[in-house]
Length: 467
Ligand code: F6P
Image (cartoon, rainbow, N blue to C red; front, top):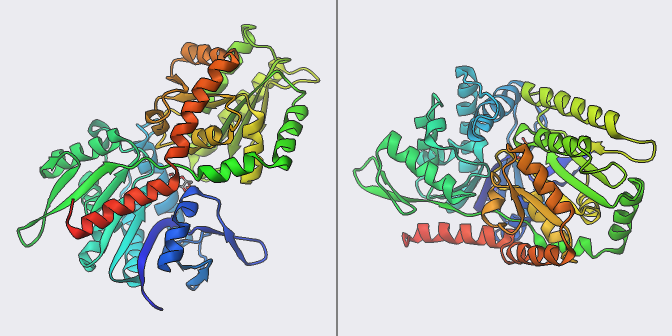
């Protein structure tokens, strides 16, 4: 196998296996962003094929070498569902749910991170660039550097990094920070996340941090400079604009509205079914507005797409029960034979159908309690090529830092959320246009290609020692 000069390491491979044994692209933004770089560098991607115990030899797919890392049923339970999604995920999202601190989960995390690091080290050519993605693999940067000091190593953290007061709960807080510091550039979604990380470094390791630079002492007594900085991720905006212009997708949007009984206002929520997304808060606010008669089921429908996620983790299973009970109650109380209050879809849809939903929706509700970025907010904005529609956006989503012209909310404040929904529903067309234009400008000017270019440029500078 020829070694690659550019290697991505992520928990998942950028493909899904289909029913007839083949592979197709998984739809994520990261895959789209990295496609041109992967192709031009004949890069390699190290990741899990998505099913337990699946053993697959490395293979080429669309110009990229894919290097599968097998996870056993136990690995999936302890490393993926356990430490990644039942310890780090709730802790890093401000302990909205209680994190599970278990030594067995930690040991599995260390062991699986080592396997990813070994696979990346084997795949990388001398002096290659390796880009590690996300919280499932926080130990990989240091593990890689230990064996391959020749490599330039980047890490991007897609989720929030919590304030030290919360982060310090983690029994392995020091090891995780040391793991991340193996990278030359550590990218975060928000300036605040990078600041929280730098503070953790100062508190735990007493290293000097200045602006975005961190002085990392080396075994030979010298120091190496790492960069910890915000690189807010974005979407492939052009592809959303293209889909929004398609006649068949516009017709589908009209069909969706008709299917809902042509209400005057369609509200939309699109989320993975995750407790960080504030779906319950959104439903509570909407239900109260119906109960108080400020909205009526003849005029307004809320479409809630909640795609299935991490269903074997107990907190997610409970959340599903809770949300479905709430939806059932609201619909039972307010539906008429011809109109529904909440149209709930526990399904995942292809991108074309999502754009049809975006075009059908007058108001998009993003009410996350904590979210690294929230790309749905950006997808909605990019799709609204007619400059109509209103985005209601939580200040606890990373997107808030860029999309300040949305109707912004604190989702914990149910009265404030209700007022924001009313403001969105009643917003005059001229104001919608003014706000949407400015939101679209930001999303179109800073797309996912800019994001990956800016990160990789910073990494190239780090390599030249030019930071
Ligand atoms: O950014 C958060 C994240 O965990 C990504 O790493 C992942 O692609 C996405 O959410 C979906 O999660 P999962 O891979 O656990 O289904």
